[in-house]
Image (cartoon, rainbow, N blue to C red; front, side, top):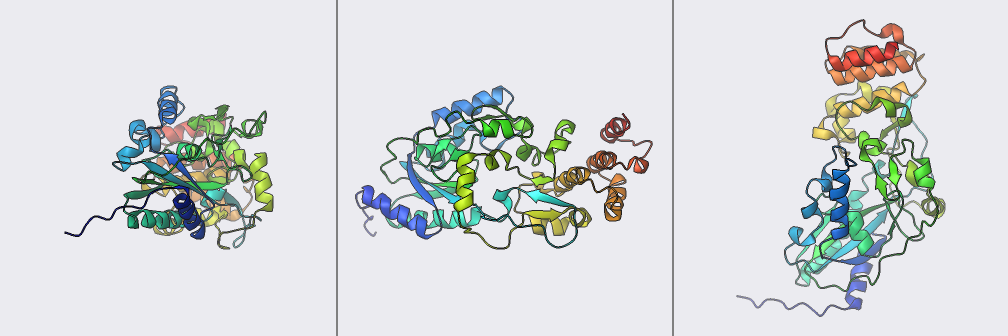
Length: 375
């Protein structure tokens, strides 16, 4: 049997080499966090779920014990290499292609920002393994509360919108970590709060979802409601505007984020998916929708929820006189899925197309919308 390799002693120079490696492979910021149980995050998850602020969201809420203990993800964990990659684009592209109406997409979903993040994390993982340590990368994974890891690793502070804000850079970043058995020296102190008295994110949220500094009510958050299956709450449909996936509002009004956006150069592909033609989407097949949008989170991998979102955006479009829009509405008012018929009823009513509405529908969800449309 070959003798087991003895790892080199860990020092700050080794950490600097890992950081340099991550930057070489596309990461923008790299820090080191301890692998101890994240008690603060665990208590917050449990309390917010108890208070009903998690809505039906699962992810790290599903098992707070697991998602706040790195050693349950990697046995013998000693540290976490935490990383951030920017998704700023200097100039948002304009809608192109078919005439509108168009729906908007949140910036984190314009392109697959997680793939280049994972490439950088993989480079660090390979290096740690080659040096004799266990190392596993996690990004957008319910095994780890990534924002808490980033805070512990000294990358930034928790903003009042509950995002991690990086000094001088704001919050347009995706986060990931490498949990490792390497005993890396951790960040001395977390970054101090930089929000001060600013409340622009709280004041600017379209649905008042930020109920306290750093506390978001998921049941009011448009980004979550667009992902959640079921009937989209009627009281938030107008606030949704033209959004079809995600919401950037609390970041777009954040001074550190806005300042960074204005001076940052794009590090992304020129091919971005910032706008979607609503008519084209609502005419597309399941296969086509999954090919175009399958990297987004769709409950049960069902494109029906994307169509539901599109019908709400269509209802907010003020395009009721467009013949193509009317044709799409007719098609969905007789759809076999009650959820889609229901949201088509709302869209038709919002666009002033009451003449399209049926007098009766056998499904109670659709009936409820028909009654509301006639009030």
